[in-house]
Image (cartoon, rainbow, N blue to C red; front, side, top):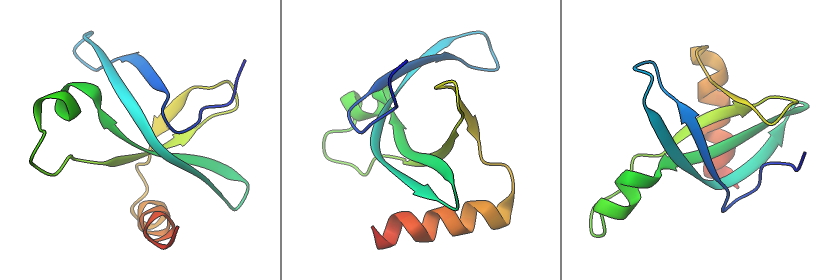
Amino acid sequence: MEKIVAGDIITFVDENDQEREIEVFETLSLEGTDYAAAGFVEDIQENTTEKINVFFVKIEDDEQFSVIEDEEEFRKISAAFEES
């Protein structure tokens, strides 16, 4: 399987069993873990003049991703993306 990179569109099933697509804007590695900054494709297509809500996810070994729930980890990742 290929590594997740900027520009990838990933489909997942949300907590309401609805398929959602996200677009990966940027990836980075921090302390041996890969992360991605992403946004919902639907929001990107609808909001041409407004800011897009960007969120961060942790990329798992098998090309899956998970939400960053730890507040300290989230702050570190947010700062790292801002610096990159």
